[in-house]
Length: 548
Image (tube, rainbow, N blue to C red; front, side, top):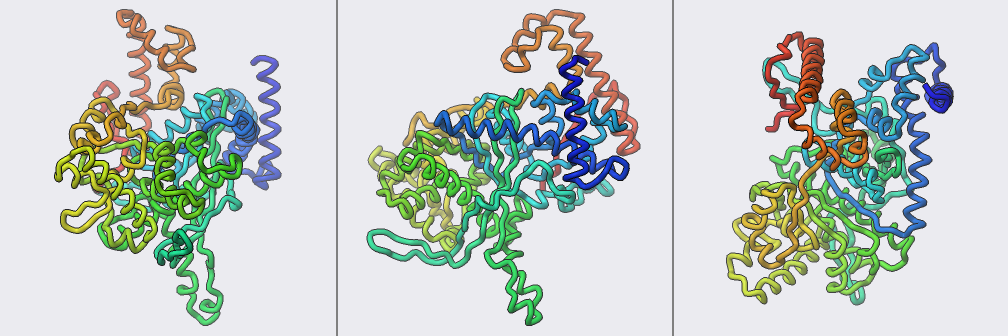
């Protein structure tokens, strides 16, 4: 160990002990494994905070543009190993803990997977956030802080049993409550004419307040923010009802607010489930858009410069109602004319599509949407009128115009969220080359004819820091020996391996690492299940919960 590394190790060890005593409230003899885990995370978090604040100051000083990534899912996984790797502090943490008889790998196993996502959509969002920080691009991720996530899987007699996630049982040492960043989110009510404009008077309001988690980029060059919303009732306890003996009724408003952030993708087979999903999507979209607009006006003054300072990316259709919310704020709150507001919205918003199945493109029963969001329904009607005029002017036939409409008139009337996102965005991307071409020729063929050039491809990628360096250190070491370590900063450098395709010795080393990983997996499966697998067998593994 170098003199510099030794000093860092000693400093980190002292910091961990200080945190253990003064923030966790335990001394070394009384501390349990989870106490040490919390102390390790908080000590690392302290180092991250300085980079976080510096990144924020630099963004404001440079007056740059920010990316705002709205996603119903962020499948971020465990953060300790990732943050240590990106901060370059893994070895120091290992040594600091080893001095107290602790194994970093064992402490890492105590960290629960954050129950904030389910599949590819959520992992894409997480990879994007890490990559944005690694590329030194200022960004916020916006989503929901789910208390119970989707579900915890247990297999009983070959069947999946679904249990609530309990990932917050010990709290979350990574996050910061930001109660000062709170917004009232309305539902229902009526729209009233006032002067030259209108005003929405919701029948019900809940408070959305922010909980922030730092997102560390590679080598700690930038730390961005994942801002998740949690919900609270404006009147969490009706004291009169409670004192009158109606103990459950006194808490009804808080339970109703809490339901917004309990579960990812609540079952929508019932009318109540469908309403909850729409409430969830509007809750997080509205809070996010209000936060973006508040920040912009506070620091820039003029809402009209929003496209110069903000790029709002919608990850699938779940946040598509953000288009209508942004229009509402510009027209009703900031007094812009509809046409100007629409132009600014389109310049600011972009949309990522994830599916080609027409039945999977989200839509809402129009009476439900109109009851919950009456002002937004008016705005969507106005947008639709504009879009249909453009379609008729372009000479599209009746079938194409019906397909383009933001309102599905076939059978029960429904609000098409994908069409709203498409119309309100200047860029619509697919996530693979074939997918993007099929978007143009299938589900969005008519919209593509009306707005040619908007659809483009951005092939899904992964962050190589987590999915190569951390997941497969043995392979990473071989690659480093073969082509140097430039690939750690630029994954495109991995193409240098093509020149070594015929190197038999390199192939043998890679095969050895692969087999050792399979042996490790076999041992882990034996430990978990009692089943012994031959490491020379072909492994075909699904690492995901089973859908309905």
